[in-house]
Image (cartoon, rainbow, N blue to C red):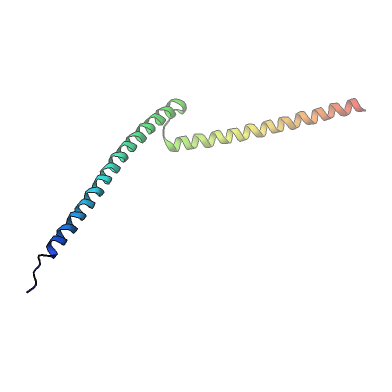
Length: 104
């Protein structure tokens, strides 16, 4: 009848290696958790600061309200650029008219 004695030390060694590997994984995961918690805290602080800044500058920190405000500002800017473009075209036409009057 074969004995299990030679297999037992090998099994013990395998279990010790596995345990050491699991401990190392646990340490890495714990470090990752600490880093992630620190990152989360930092990001929450940044968000609070940005919300306070948005509230102070724009009267709201609601992302949807800020999006609508941005769209309105873009529309206003497009309108102002169009008005300025028209003004420049008018000035150019008037200047050409004046130049023609002096040429003739």
